[in-house]
Length: 335
Image 1: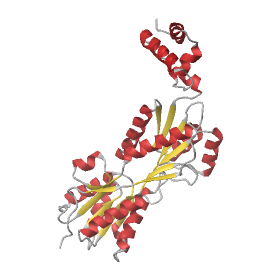
Image 2: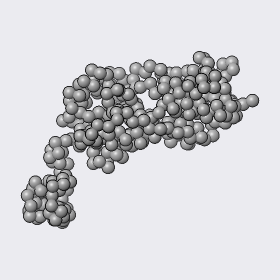
Image 3: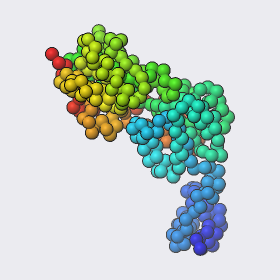
Image 4: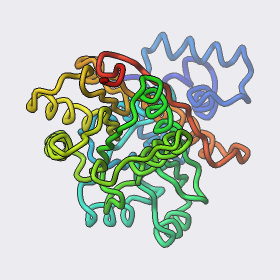
């Protein structure tokens, strides 16, 4: 029969409350007593009940993570960072996936319950003010990743700076005719990160007296197949671009497929740059903008732990830098 907390208390010559304080790493235990309790725990091979520990702490030890499109490579990387940080903090992760507007509304209505979760992390989901009011009434702490709300702590990457970085890299190679393949400018789900990257591209080009022609901007569904179709149309146009910036690596791979279908050499005739730096980007040799995706997840957890512990107020917005990773898909502009 497994040992109980009462067995440990009896073996160590202390009360159950003292054993509980040692198990929960409370500071108000004499070091000699603490050592005796730990020795009894080891001798009896005692494993504390997770449910009992949660009750003693008055917490669920679980964090709800709400995300869009769970299978996207960038989301998987963010979740990897969240999960790793939560494991270190001895917290569980419950993931809720959103694929429709109806599901989004239902999740944000039903999830904020302190009896179920200690906190809520939202990836690429920003609550409306009415939803935020409900969450605040529940007392549940919230942290955003890749989303913005003026009243909530959030961890984001520098999307505008990333767009500028991509454009400047291609400008240094002598490119003057640009294309952009992005997501929907006003998505019904998610946040307009693609548009922020496009804005950064435009800012960099304007510094050189340049702009992207309207027919060389194609935005739509976030899939490789859709990006390929948009790119094929763009590359068949007159005065086609010599460089295309994609708002994600997924879309950039669609651009590469379109170039291969049309017999256009990359990077000899067309340079291509993506965004995110997921594992597939390295596999295909894609030049891309690296986002510290896993780090955004870890940073969000650290903020969440601080909120749960009642830490002093910190700046609401934390912006992580991005960087260029040059591989085989960018090069000098064709003559």
